[in-house]
Length: 458
Image (cartoon, rainbow, N blue to C red; front, side, top):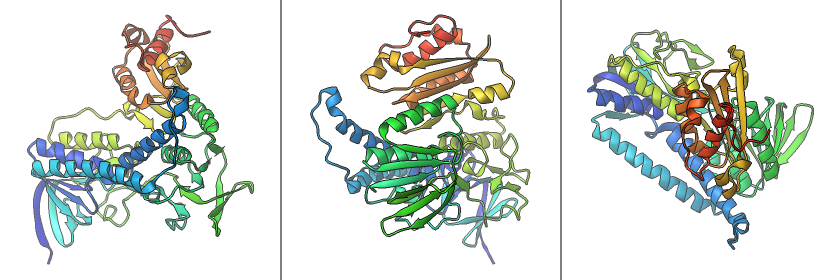
């Protein structure tokens, strides 16, 4: 007979960004909460995604700064990459954040259960024989790297999980997949000194980004010596004594020391009792309504389990939404177009709102303005190239902001406010931006859209 784990207002299955955000907000709203996690609190983002990858990208930026120091009149030499020290730095960052999160969860009187949970009814989750009853259940079991069924040996054929632990810098890498994960690792490995080729089956790198941004990134990657094979499919690979030989559609082959499989992440939903409880799945993704409700009992789902943006901050927002919805606060539905997206490669790619293609498909008559960072003082100081593109409805509000260049991820917040507050280009044009900052590029693009171009050449 199974023992009782107790009854709670909210049972959360999964302690990643979506799950722990829901748990924290629900506890704040005086609900009793149990948070069930089989691995470590913080999930993919903290341990295998956002945080450790950005630590690698920052170390890569420091490597580039050392290599290019003479450009800035500084004599420094690049001696190479000490992977053990890189991992020590990365793990210290992750460890500190994990400790802080664990303390925060504890301080809110949230019951944390370590173990693999399974949905065993419309109102219960079972962990190692203990049954946790929930007036509400939240599924937040996240995602894992897709592998195409390839044999991941952890040495010559790896996913992003193994790439985060690799104890050496490979001489050459083929990155299978030109989405965010593939592009970020390609950027890191190039900075570390590897020969890199990115293979993407779709016509551009970062297929979800605006075509203009993808072109700028491809050009920047070419300058950095990163090769891109787009609009071409992977056929097969064989492991050799020295690494791997990858065969592409049409018979082209590429040899490398390592094959990084970065074709995206798939939901973790199999064998957890979801379908048995009546929860609808499509390709493994949980189907929900605008309130993130599954249509079964009081079962909700958030994060990478949903076929929405696989971003930690989207999951975080979804978790808060569910807690507030359960509490009867009637929160507004999440506008996924208004969620900012950043790829932290060198150069960075950041956007919010619609691409030109999506805006036209939705029937908008649009106006667009490209402002090249060559005209921006701070970008020249940083020696970065790229552009800011703003899309607006003709005689209407801004529909999208798309940026490429070093550090533009920090600029997307203003773009987010502009898009979400439905600002007109003329309203943004009135705002005075600090000089010299890269934010001026955003201001200049809006000035030009408003018919007042200052530093824009015809």
